[in-house]
Length: 331
Ligand SMILES: [Zn+2]
Image (cartoon, rainbow, N blue to C red; front, side, top):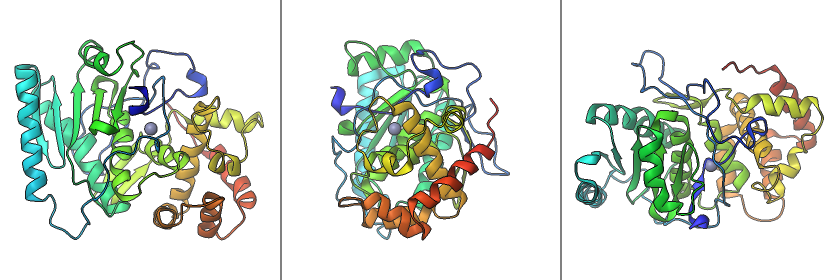
């Protein structure tokens, strides 16, 4: 089962070993200016396990091109069927709302559920499609939200029979299902949503980029025109590593396929903030589109970075690190 579960993996170095949420977890998704407040959201993406995201390829193709009518009647029907299945399986325990391609079920009131669906699934997805992903899912993506640890753990036991379910939530690509303790906030949900959507547009993205982009969205501002990552709880560990001169070179992060190895906590932080640095320089969308087409072959990652920046990666790095040290995150 383990290899079929993706997660928001991972504790920042500073939190290594914790099983509980850090106190005062930050709000994760924020509405665009002028929008009503989102469902209360807070969270750190963190889970105890992770597997290479490009290992279990979910059924990602053929996706629906952006030009086709979306959602198709077939997809809408599949969503209706999935909603019926959930109602049959869970009865009154879960409410269900449908926003194709998403079927979202939860153990809270329908109004509350719909608010979570809107703020942590539908709007971020729309923003990601606008900003990055040209192809949309042609299959149902299911989200199960539990308002508290007890019901979440009860459900998670099915996927983690030996225990050790991630604290906040997880995604199973084979079933295209996200499972969350939504009381920990919406950030992990948007992280996992990024994984769930990217594969339809960019199959098998290199892990550093997949996790970097997903982590960027843990704390973000969502608008019609796109989604903007903001500083989050992963910053202090990264700044600490930069100060201590223990951070490995960027070229290593993007070329060595060891993201989930012993350095995974700091890898998440380094990848997140490098992706955020591209966003800061106005290069992230360009990078995404270029990398999607040129991600194959040795050194493809470094070549893509250097192509978009127009500089050697060793020249980009000092400016990136200096920029990270200017950032501030307050819990
Ligand atoms: Zn992840």
